[in-house]
Amino acid sequence: MSTVAEPTNLEDVFHVEVLPALPHSAISLLQLSQREDVGPNEFARPIEADPGLMGQVLRFVNSSYFGFSREIMSVSQAINLVGSRAITNFALWNAVFSVIPNPTFGPFDLKSLWQDSLRRAIFARIAGKHLKLANAEDLFAGALLQDMAIPLLLKELPEKYERLIEQRAIDGRRLSGLEQEMFGWDHADAAALLAKRWNLPEEFVSLIAQHTQMEELLGKGDMFRGAGCVALASLLPSCSDAAWRERDEFLASFKQLVSPSADVMNQLLAAVDQQTTEFAPLMKLPVPAKSLVQFIGEETA
Image (cartoon, rainbow, N blue to C red; front, top):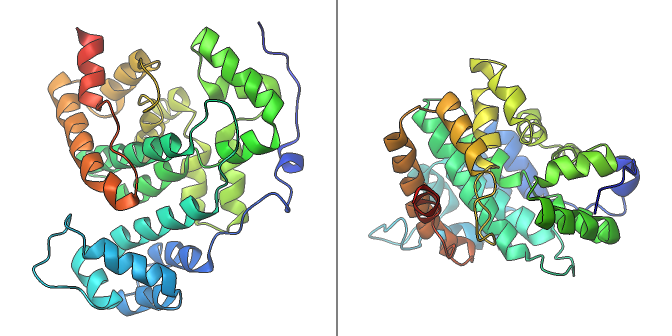
């Protein structure tokens, strides 16, 4: 079976009627996160204006993960204790999770996609912090959103995507390459378009748009290391895969971007596994059945 090129206009696929609306509170928080002149009170306002989000944020901060000895009763206090970026990322997660549809599509499982997104977001942030990048928290958001358009594409182009999924299973190739051949664009372009329509900060749009361009980013120098971390995260194995398809590309890119040390890689992957185990229940997700340490151990053996 071969993929037949059938150029499709992305603007036609993602017409206005198709795109879900992101809650205004989440957009406001993301825009505030790009400013340096705002404090906890400013961050608290859009959360307090959304009673549902306020309740979720307070449950998040009062969870056993943070382990505070007394109950946190106000949003401002929560922001002071855990930081505005953690709260913003949590709000963003809840917002996107709530508006992206679950397409009825063969083996596709939306929860597996969100598991992958969470683990990749955690990896991008940990890699960014290891590299001492100032925008490590933005990398979390960029990786979290990188695949958010896939469910919408599955819903709008079911027959074509069924062919792509079958082709991926046969050839073991990346979905983005097959998308480029069939449509002339990939799900990174689609997610970036969605982020633009939501008026998300331009940095997030750029991180999302470039996440399938690992090789190009490696050749662009230090200014693109953050985008490289998000792209590297996209090479992690899917929670629904039995084997790590992009393992060799991940290892080569990790050595060039993050560290040539296998020990450093193993330490970072172990840290990602630990944080994923801690965070998944907070996001109402199951912990991945196979850890990254298990994946790399199996392949190495």
